[in-house]
Length: 394
Image (cartoon, rainbow, N blue to C red; front, side, top):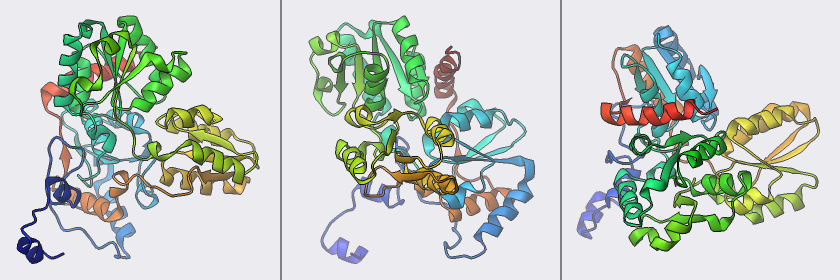
């Protein structure tokens, strides 16, 4: 439909529609804005050479980070690859790099900015590369939740634990209220620490990681967990339910990992006899319970590295990584497939493509700073406090 037709019908695009089209900005959202420059054409046959030339021109001034879920065309230019926290920590370990180009999503770039020095500048090649899970918990919603916990008389007993996949605002809230950050690999240690500080945990923003860690890894029951829905009055919970719960789980999830279901597991076992099902703990509880192995992105990679030749694996995580691992281990006779029949990339992680990377690198090489991610000082201070508590975990 053309703009003229839209005007004739008196239909106005919604803010969300404009946002998804990349034509508007929402400063409180993980999804972002249009590119301020002219992108090179995706069909340009010289894109790889241009990226390489710009990176070589910048030399030690630039450090490129690539998350495991990035496209192959982008990750080939990464100086280091890893999960979100590993990359943020790697950035902090390179103080000589003036520019940190983060090929990932917005919350990851924020964490890199928090952990690097004031002299370093973090760049996200496409500001529309966000995280739907991080968007499921806003600062206003979490503050309202804390008011609900206060009215129920339990706020002093509650310790917030926030997943790395959260905005800087949520990390700052966590630090301000005596909590810590966790990753999918240290969630159990974070929860054990939190229960030494208080009687209850408010787990943000991924309900599945919180539930799976509490029930599968720590022996709690499903009845110990309640789900706080920020779109319902009082989170959809009574004061009695909040007082009885040990784990108050935020109603958030990963759009990719949440798509896997029990049918996916049963189907792949029927199609591939002897297959090992290996899933990320962001998956639903019934999927995790039915899997053979459960672990973080780094765990998944190491498990496949150690797997015997000829073994068969169905992996429940983002498709870019699964496909890359399948190609990597095929010469060793390891059969690796995506857990679901329907392929699904992380749509926002996939926003970082070669044209955006080339544009960002060439702009920096010409002395123009673009798409800088900068966390304000007060937010940074409290968010860093929460991150440092995680780093101090045994």
